[in-house]
Figure 1: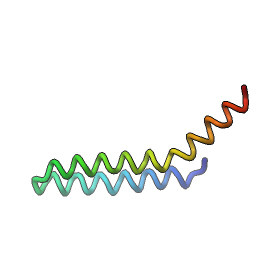
Figure 2: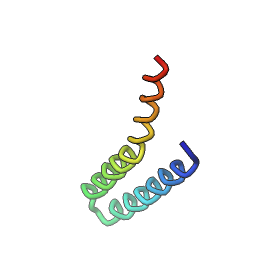
Figure 3: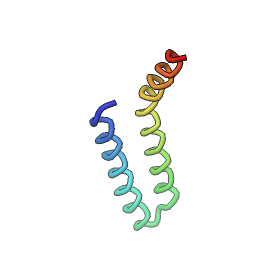
Figure 4: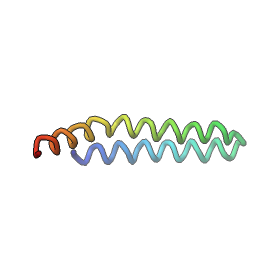
Length: 62
């Protein structure tokens, strides 16, 4: 796991935070919440291969 995944997560978080603020100010709270949910799903999908590799290495240890 490198530093690039941390930067990608930070970038997605920054974009989601800006979109959430913009949508909240406009009065679209339901879209703001969906944006946050989509951001969480995107980050989980980015971390899934890393988590799989971690679980494989733990399984190989035992």
